[in-house]
Length: 418
Figure (cartoon, rainbow, N blue to C red):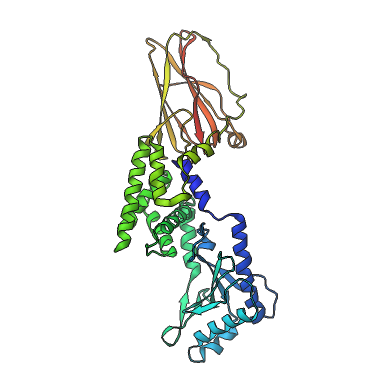
């Protein structure tokens, strides 16, 4: 199912045009404010993007509660003016709202102010802006307004939040962002789920801190996360997570029994139509990996006298080389380009004194550019271990040699790596 999860990730990630549209809108809002509060040319330094758009965890399709979180840095000298009046926090939000209204900012609905932020609804219903006016402190934290209960200033530290996320994303090889986007898509399917977007990111970070199998297939990671999340939530949320966990478990059982269509049906119950259907996936990935140039491989060096048979069985192991992750068929499922191990086992009916020879042939631009093309025939044993190092279509073949002749050959066992 790994190919379908990869396609699923592409389906929910913002497109480049959507990212540019969001950038144009939040920069437009901040420029209007900059031109009012500063005498300098706007260069973006008075804005601070945070939240899902900064972390690259925003997803499509858009929903009503999906906003771009951006902070506008107010001039330091203006703080005393607001601090010295009753509920200066409310006065600050009111002024910012007025500036945006007076400028006739053409994004849609009039900006609404409440609590701590200004909400600017866009005319096309996408990339609504949630603006937070703030005063930057010497320690790089911010003072932000809270208008409730007579007003007060609160300390806000988005940089620490971003650092924690980025550290996790780096240590997990970008799994933090990928998993966050997937779980947010699940949240869209469960309208009654009362878990906020930033809480999903926090749960993902906490989960991955103690998770040792970051190189596992996405299906396994998602199931393990739902098991973790089930212990973290209560109330109605627990029943929603239980349902997702049960469906993920059932999907993996189907996958292990190579019932991929049924596995896909279960994942679509979890993630909705963004998860590709089985027929769509088969069509999309058919022929995706083509065999590259293999003119560099060594030709057979013995006369063939095929009087016996030899075949190859293959098993996928995680990078620790201890945990098996199912079998592998020739030209079958796409394997991860993450240095997993494949255990190839030769089975022959040959008897007497004979030798196993192997030929591993890497093809494609990844192997070529990394000086990883292979094609020599070499003597070995009944078992051969190889790693999933280079993307592309490759093959391995086994020869049984006896008395200077090739008495059996397996044929090409094709391996697809993405």
